[in-house]
Length: 487
Image (cartoon, rainbow, N blue to C red; front, side, top):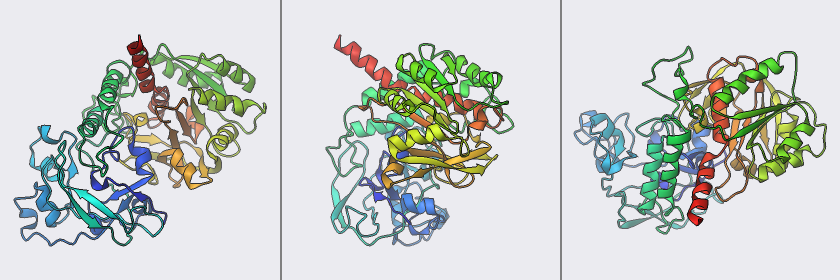
């Protein structure tokens, strides 16, 4: 089993929950499972890659579930209780939390002092930079630095993907993002490095997120499970565009170019009009072309912030991929659509050029994926992401291909956010750093959903959500603010 490098921030890592960072961070670094060696999923392959299960050598509480200290983090880390985790989850609101219910306090800690916390993250020799080196564990009170206690790193253990515990809401909302950013900005002692490069810009990021929610994104942005919707469809997805990611009409200043290279008797202009009309509801201006030459010309015009590439079985113009790469490098976002081989040529060749990733496969799926927090790489599930706002169940498509990663590095660059029912990744994204000039990318491995079963579980909402996310409006807001501040 391939193992990930242990995160230096251990169980108190903030990035593992961050809306912006959790996907790439959790596919690069492992974290301790809160059930330690008693975890029921200890032998699951995805679980074993992302989370560690070191032995937590503490006695069983003699009062067990009748214990009056189940809400005490220090007691919970010192004694075991049937069915409960060894460690509590940091509440997003910490000391400002107003939820004083027993069930909430039994799951989440709120800045209370933990005198001892022995969490070792070890993996096989040669994989762990911290192996055989002294590391530190902080005594935690949010926002206040406390004394550090030392412990020696030990022998390797399997790592596992944690799906027992979630934050107080299952979804990564703007409020959670706000908490993490504020905690970092206050120099929380969650990390080993008190001069962390994360400290600093979070007040601005919080303001940007507020601007997003006010102008472009709906109030439920980032939420897949919405428990108080006005109504639900047959797939248990909330009914109504207020549960989409983007607000209606908010994107009227932006343009999408749809390059449809695959055409058949069903996937004609009438069929293509359905997703185009859905995009227009959000305000997007849409242009539809069917040849590579037209697409190259339109991309060079700098009129379109997003381009859809609907692949076919061969590339006609040898300069097409270089033109597409240039478009992306200059800030253009790309929605890559592929299907079963050989109808994946354009997407595959672009990904090979950029990341060393190719596409192959011909899986007949025709099933529905379900939402599961941190379930991005679990068969038949998708995880939390803005793209899946308002979607608890999502149709995977009919015929589906999947990415082939040439190197471990290529796997970390292109982030998997959904896994088809055959166990292969089916939706992946690339979100470049804010300092990069590149545009965002999204790959969908089963484009027949665009014209067959458009009304199936979550399809229309997902396609429109992804287009709104691809725009990278966060970066555009920052650039606008910076430009205004210079004046």
